[in-house]
Image (cartoon, rainbow, N blue to C red; front, side, top):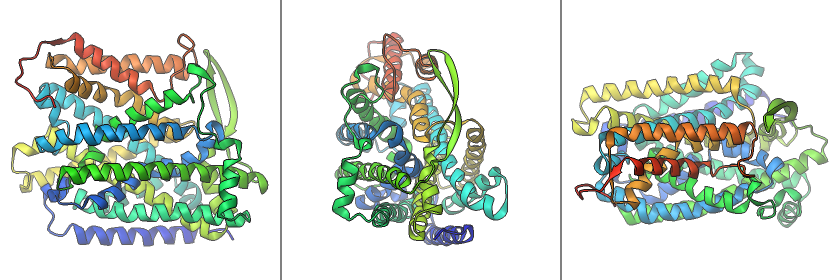
Length: 513
């Protein structure tokens, strides 16, 4: 039984009615300070659950299952590296953030280096999170348009995007983080339930019990996790992926205002640390389940003669361009869910993709608003709850919603390849300066010429972008080496060396750790 577009739309409307109801209840009498920090009294376990939805997003829900077709389960090497990164966050970063009572974590850079480094760090977060969240929402809008809005209403893609963003704005503009803590927890529970039940239902349709499911995935060639044979030229090499995973976790969680803003609403440091370790264990399990689902979906497609959707892409190998038709694996899961699998799978898919996409994007919109208001408009230096600041905050919230719309439309015309790779590629370029700034502040005693910090960060991004273009896009190896996600580490190192070049012996009148 196939799902009708009308039924899909009805599920989405009912889902958002629940979210808006939660928003109304939690945002009653909420002021600006609660919009930003929820009174710093959130239960750690609520944050841990909600962070799963924030981190997984629609990109994981769709792209990770599709990713196994070209790269097997090599992505698990990166996920295992996350565990190291989360330990660094728990034992190094969180004690600092709590000691300084930060609302915006980039306030550390002001105390360590000065105002230019502070605003530079925050600006790169704004750039990174805006691009990354727009990519995640783009994928969600792409699926909704293909399977709901175009078949029912025959409307342009831009209208689908606009509706998607308006829904997020509606339930976040008043309560902010105070609302999101609870809506994300609900959405994460929907996400986890959808994932597990989908695996079970697909298995049942393939006449496989739980034991048979595990055995089927285990013996499929796409289930290979560890890759040691290819050497440093192999993008799937274990050591490259593992190290990159550790730094990705540190930068995209520990140096990210979106994730840290939630954690810092936990009352105590100990509670926040328990939160991190609980969350990190769950994230490994969830990614393993997503990749196992991907293996099952490709087996299911093969057994039932289902053709994987295709798209035209242009790739470069040592500067030579070739245009070929390749599988559009991002659409495999929704195609099977809506057209071939039992109706229950389609319903679960809608709940899962909606929950994962909005849990990631709603908190991003709030954290971007927070960073701009605190770091650039100086709310913390005035009466944060004044009516003037409240009006300004609502305008900033609306402005970032508009920016999301513009970027998603750009990605609609430009994006190629798995979206998860695009997310990490963009993060490698835009998050690198944050890694370099924080690392230099933590692990040296030197002070810098603060006025030059912006130019150092821009220079690191330019060099990294050129390397990415030459090595990653055009396909020219550098001494036989091809960069993958670890391009982020190179970017951070270039920033660190640039800061070293403009540094001098510190006078001790600054916060280090």
